[in-house]
Length: 135
Image (cartoon, rainbow, N blue to C red; front, side, top):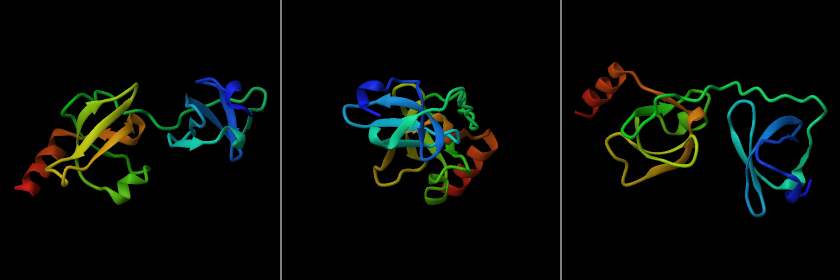
């Protein structure tokens, strides 16, 4: 497919799966799979979705996220393995994307553009346990 044929919200086929176009950039685009993962792809790798195709997001977005909310990556997200621990929302980006930093600091490092589908809000007990761990 050509980039000029694609619009946000369209259903297309990528790697044999029906995906939804999230954002059309100048040369590439962002598509979302049904499990909530986002891919940055070239339009040449996409095909039109079959007639009657549907897109059912199997992951629910975290709700109640505000600045200062304590969160962690959901278990199905690849970052949950490489970046365990508690994070704090430090900024709200476009739509349902957030900027966050590790609770207690991590040498000034932070995550940008994390979708709400990759996060879960922590309970008060989990936050207290994290505070006790940090001393």
